Image (cartoon, rainbow, N blue to C red):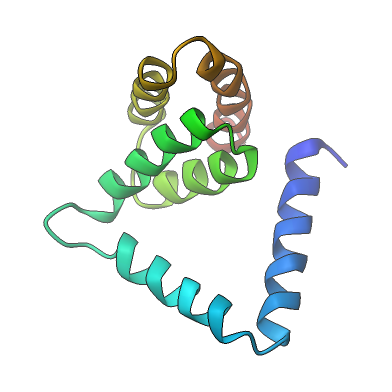
Length: 113
């Protein structure tokens, strides 16, 4: 199993386990997530692209994988995701280029199948 598939498996398992605990905090987080990414003045796609850039800056591989996938589901193109990654590079400086390399791997898996 590759790194991206293992990350997906672990994320899904952790989500299921957290939901199963009956955690009110996790349930509130999920509700906040739904509200944050709902279409509003900014459409969901744009919000997901913002999250991609932030994920690069904070070097959160799981976040990059999730939000790149969500951006694609919301209609983002590979080029739009790349530009969000590039904004993250600019905002994060040199260290963000390391995150950007991982984001490129996720983009390959997402858009090239």
